[in-house]
Amino acid sequence: MSSLDGLMVEDVVITEKMDGENTTIHREGTHARSPDSRYHPSRDWLKAYAAGVSIRLSQDERVVGEYLYARHSVSYENLQSYFLGFAWIIGDEVQSWDSSMSCFEELGIKPVPLLYRGEFKPELFDEIIASLDMMKHEGFVVRTADAFKEPDMSAKMGKYVRADHVQSETHWMRSKLIPNRLAGE
Image (cartoon, rainbow, N blue to C red):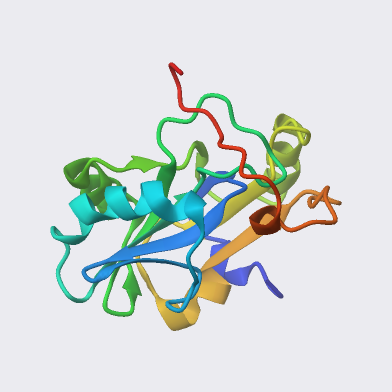
């Protein structure tokens, strides 16, 4: 993100940046990052989960979230779900945070953890960084609470990732599959 101008608004949302796979659920199924993502056994849970969501979406709707079944660099021991939503998109418009939360509630999707909601202020990012345990958190994502067009995403949304985030030389998909844990397991 080259400028913070698009985030200097009265209502910004900051959520935890989860260490998983950016994943889209749509009417036809699901894919990780790109529609041509190949098979991996860690995605079996997601395929079953998405089947119950996909049929409830219209052709132009997408739900985007972090898929957290497989451990990457951060270990999670108390997840509400292996899929945590962060955006609801209709056509080329990322819906407002409030509309996304309403959609998620209707679909039974848990959202990523909310860290802050309110007015942007210059010291905000330093305060959020100071509040995070960088051994347990990858970072944070900030977005305007209002809806915006996908082509404007680089101005209306950004992320901060901890220094030296990736702790392994081997990509998680080529390593032994270690599942994260759900709350109550």
